[in-house]
Image (cartoon, rainbow, N blue to C red; front, side, top):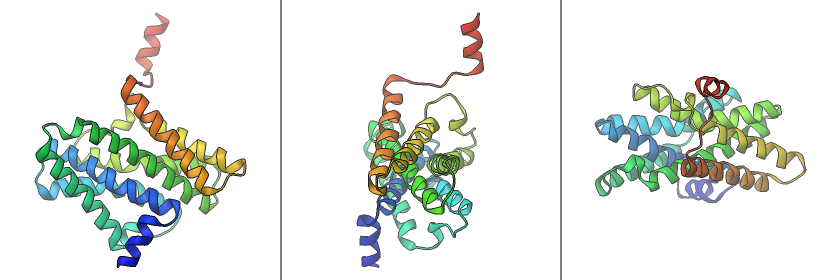
Length: 218
């Protein structure tokens, strides 16, 4: 068990990114459930759904058993994120909107975008497949969490969120195509995703809606 934990924490780029993403997204999902006054079981379910929803969908798309069902370490990392969210809710007045949670969300988005791109590349899919699977890995869990919270998935609105994963996944493919190794591609993918997401939060970036476009024409 201890050796397996070390391999997860300090192994290949996928293992590192997956570990970061699981903890970060479990924290963010649990924080949302805490705001909605869910009980401890509900908080845990929403947190784990956000942590594992995207990765499980990714694994199904590449025809493999979801990692969450293969190793107890995966679930342990998700529960760690849930525990951190509960602690933060006691210490902070508004944990969901606190910079710690917002930065964790950006880091989780970047980590899961990169993990998805790595898995898709190893599966030998097309460039469209790489970007699609990277994006699903990054935002799928958040969509599942929102459904459990009885609201429309926020990635369908104008917030600049899934677009960051699309940019990150594209960057991974481009860097890999020009001959860089997987580690370099992973770093570039994560950097592009987290920087664009933090910039979007800082400068309030949004994608336009049809209504916005109509106003520009008038």
